[in-house]
Length: 176
Image (cartoon, rainbow, N blue to C red; front, side, top):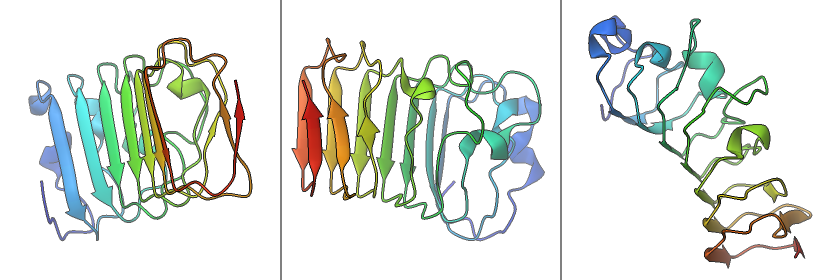
């Protein structure tokens, strides 16, 4: 769905009849205040968001039950209020998430617990990052145009890392 002008998404977007939907892109939905209830889309594998008002993906799309059990790829673009994937920490909210891309989300704070199983992590034009936890599966890490007083990048646990790209980072402390 691209260019949706409504404040609230239509009910059919959360319909159980879409249970086999695997890819959802909500692009240029600048007026929408909340996400549709994505927990009713159990087969969702790829999610791309480009909205203005979402702060937490999990909280705003959860209505009980298992959420995002098959989600593998998530890309979040141009969401100025976006802070984290979930308001609450938890390991099983995104059990199969392997790639996440965060672009132009100045308030984004990376969640260590939720991102342990990632293969690829991309962060562009965000104000903070702190990649310092158990990323044994991570093989691709791109960080560009992220500026904070002191960004931390700990490489000692990234035993599978093959691609590392750092660009336009003001201060970074690398622990190898």
